[in-house]
Length: 163
Image (cartoon, rainbow, N blue to C red):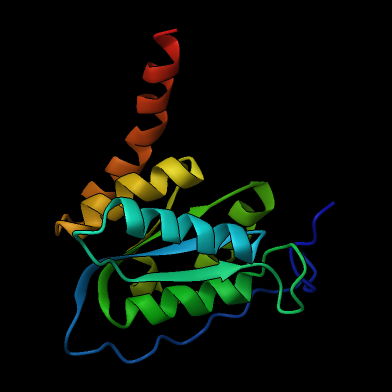
């Protein structure tokens, strides 16, 4: 089993206070939650190289502090807060089950005003990132960016079904 974090799931979840919002904000930023720092870095590199015409704020909440595989809800909270300070919306993409659990826990720990501007996507990690990155890069709002990420699974299914 891959560790989620050192916190016990039954422990009370502390609510963190939001950071001050910047006076200059971008559209939508993306948080990548992955068990592997290398996977998240490479996924981001792929998105940036394939969609080089745009620049989207992205934060990584990937791997554990000691370099091992795993996810940490506290790292997700920190990543979302950093983006929420400078973006109108934040889309969170996670790679696997306990990454999703870490992202859900993180959203419970955030101030409600930040949570209102964040979405956790069920999109596939790579395809969802590419769709979201492109949509965010051309200035679409959070709902449209999330929808674009979600459509990635169906687009892939359509391609595979052709064979």
